[in-house]
Length: 229
Image (tube, rainbow, N blue to C red; front, side, top):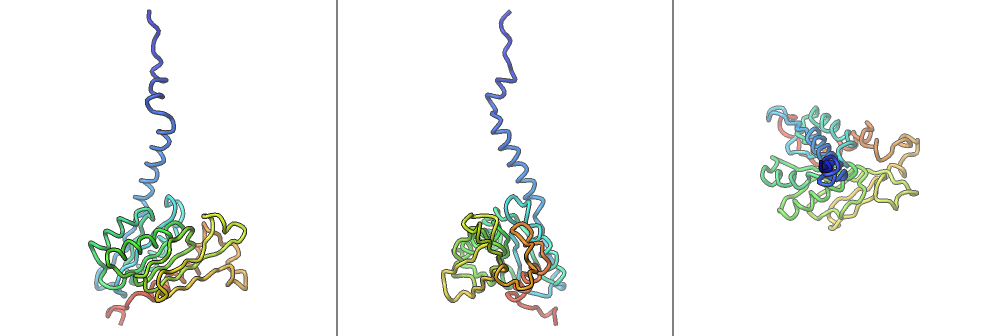
């Protein structure tokens, strides 16, 4: 009798273990991304503010759950908002170009999602779309804020020992055009009572005070509708 082939070994040669891991990780990312999309839409007569807010989550959507909570709070306040995975910023931009908001446009992001929000703003600049508000929470490697942004508020917490690394901390941002209103607010330098001592890159977006600052900044860029009155 001839020697029987080891089909398991042959299968392993055809499908290396690394490919199985890549496939599994890709599937997990896709499922996680699908699960994090949130449309907090209001009926026209329920909206208290004109315009729309897009919130982008960070790496692999495992963190940045605070963006979901901000979306819910904005919805409760009468603001139409959408939460999306940060890596889908281009699809978000195409959606905005295809379906422009009825009023101001505000982009919000945390961590890599904040970096992606700046990329999204730059894409919209190339499409002739104005971004009324750009609210960033702990961006990590942000591009320069483009000149189509009216106001950018960047809330971050620096960490000098690790600021040289492009992760696990927030950094200040720069703008192309001096006419863009820019606020870089470092929690580490503005915390006389130690209120934010325990905040880090992974929980900053879940802090109630941070969320309230984000919501206040979002409202600042939106226009109140007649329903509010």
